[in-house]
Image 1: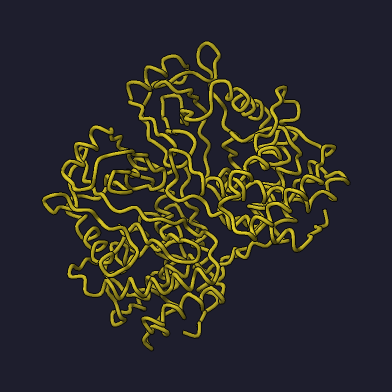
Image 2: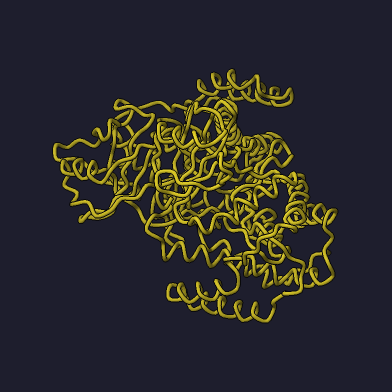
Length: 313
Length: 313
């Protein structure tokens, strides 16, 4: 994590006095997460997650917290932010913007079966449809403009071969913008570790802090690139079809989306290839013990590029 | 993490005064790790990892720290513990046993190719051979006795089918003890995230806190169960062979080991199925945000059991 902010029981109880969330019974720091400080908090009223935002500012946060509240009201299983006694979702704790949200049960499925993919695909559609009437709009902070800026920064660290791949992909993507595809608020980071299951059922979708307005198909490409890969960086058609079929039961794809799919899979791989290169070569002041390997998404990108996949959507 | 211990720059500098490790230039908490508090530490003398042990005691630690020092002297790329001015590897910091070790470069390969497996297999052999003359002996703390005790604790949470699998596997393993197989100190937790690479080359092997004396083949089974699986919980023969061939260039397997291999693969899967069930159903006071899914190792165990695999060792 960039910074970890220690919070004492006394500081937390004092902060909780401004909430109708019971009296503090226990707290425990959470070791996951690289952008924020997180604690599990148990009170007489239930179980919560406390987040102190180490990088996002007071101005950034309402979009994400209100989106979670909006979705939770529409039965999407995401954390429900708790407002304080004056109705605020974000307040100061230990000098940092902080929020309290409901804690969700379940565990991540790092090795999803087609049944997990089916149930998750359905939830992705519910998330997209549920967010459609969310009134605030924020563009995707990791969109094409960010790709181009980030590519400039990491280019010096790449091999000739990688530079060529990156340049040609940016050119390809610049000629494949899909401004007319159906869109709305997307999660944009629906990796397996951001989804919780109880058995085969999705019990939680967490970590909305990359959300923004973009093509729904882009969200699906990010999902498929993480949930449906074999260990050889190729797509597993069984899981892809399970996920997309379940999604389409609730939100059938438009004809233009089927056409855009191969380019979107590449766009989804490009975005994470770039961010992992950036985290590896240009780490910020606080660091991960082991940054993710960028090579994985380079392989996925090459796979998509070479195989010109056209799934029967 | 169970507990995270905040350490101030002043506290750390005061502690470092007892070491010949330069003056403190920076420190940053590490979010990985569930058993200990870890910081990256930069001094005028180099880069280090500071660990405060939250569960292991002063009595437990010498075995692990001296094993790392022993291996580092034998060119195994593991963290090298730094002794203080009076020669101690473990001293108190903020009331906790603490150690300073060299920080290793590299990143984990969560999607290893056969080339990664080849290079890692060679290092596993070097680790086994290098540890052979380590003078202290400690039995593997997660061996058969622990399996049986843990099985009793988690049995109430299992389905009938799982109980049956567990009972029959414990019975099978009790009739397949391999006390005569070659052995020595083993790492016993050589998962992909405990190994660092620079390119294809192994640059680090970390986290020795499950090490103990056991059959070398058991260590190999744990490795293969993590490094060589497909997304369908089956073994990938290409990676298995790359890893074992490279291992055998330095430490050829004995005839009895080839015979024991199928049972060892099952033993390796059983051990992590049990610990993940335990972490899921009986979490300790401090918790992981998302415990690992025990189902993955249940699938691996069933795969080994069903397929009666006999790799050409």
